[in-house]
Image 1 (tube, one colour):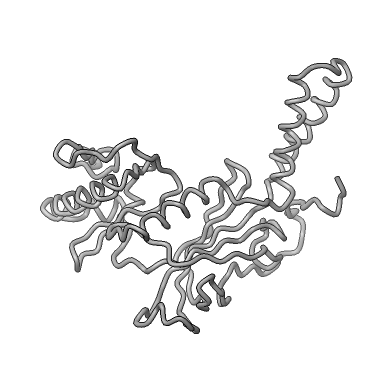
Image 2 (image 1 turned 90 degrees about the vertical axis):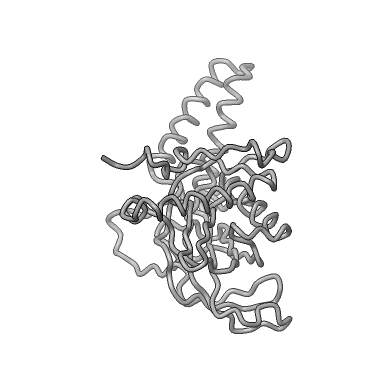
Length: 283
C-alpha cells in the first residue's frame, strides 16, 4: 500500500481554501447535450455512515448544446451530483486500530479464519475511507435504477432520469472530496412546486391538508403499481405543486421491489408513516 495512493482528510490547522462544489461548471452527458450549472438548490449533504462515503448536492442548470434536439423547450433542469468523500479521521483511526489488533491476533493464531476475516474487513474499510472507489455507494446505484425505471414507465409522480455523466473529483470541489474519486451527475426535469416541511404543511388550512393527502395517495398508489415501495417515508420526500394540485414523491436511495402489483382497491395508504396524518399535528 503506497503512501501516495492514500488520501488523508484535511487538518483543522490548514489554511482555508475556496471550495466551489460544481457551480458554473459545464457537464457533457451521454446524449451529447451540454448543461451549465447555474445555481445551487441545496447544501451539500454528506453521508459518512456507509462506504464509499459521499456527498449529494442538487443544482439547477441550463442547456447550452443540444445536438440531438432532445430538450427543445426545456428552459431549466436539475442536476443531482453525488461525489466521493474521504473518511473522517475517527473512522480512519478506528480502521487502523482494528488492523493492528487483527495482525496481532494473526501472530498468536495464524490459522484463525476469524482473525483473517477481521483483518480483511478492516483493510477494506480503510481502503474505502482513503482511496478512490471503483463503484459508487449502493444507495446511489439504487437511486439511478429507480429513476431510470420511472423514466421508462413515464411515471408522472416522480423524478425521471434523462441522462447521466461521470467525472473524477478534483481538489476544488470540497475539502472532504476524495480527489480522483467518482462524481456522478444525474440530469432530471425540474419538478414544479415546493418540498413539504412541517412548518409549511401544518400552517395550511385543514381542507388544503386533506387535498394534499388525497393527491399524495394517488401518487403513492401509482408508484406502488410499478412495484416500487419507497422505504424512506418522510415529509421531506414529498413535493406539492399548488398550480396543478399534484404531489410528487422524490429521493429513491432506499426502496424495495414488491413481489406483486398491489390491488388498488385494498392497498392502504398510511399517512402517519409520512408525517402527514392529521393525528401527527404538532401540539
